[in-house]
Length: 100
Image (cartoon, rainbow, N blue to C red; front, side):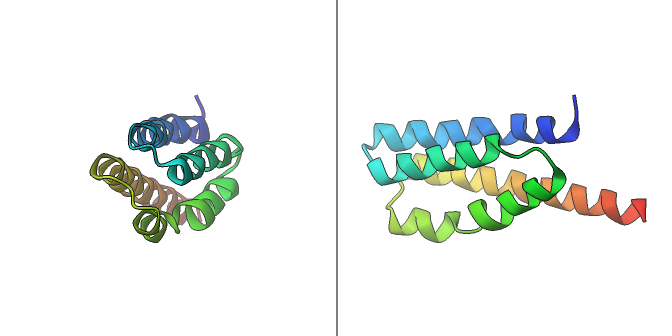
């Protein structure tokens, strides 16, 4: 399994749990956002795509969650998603530093 596939397998369950929580809360705008995250992640095929996903799609998650009034369950999974994404980004950065 390549690194991008492994990353997607790590992140996707959090996105699905966020969507599930938002559906349970009947937060239609939040569900639309979570589906958009899932779609954006599914389109990632390269490291550059992944960094773009982190910078473009995940970077707005915190403020957006507040404005869309995510419930505590969705917030918890969002925090875990962001924490995991940050760890992955650091790992990718460290790997590219040692490659040069």
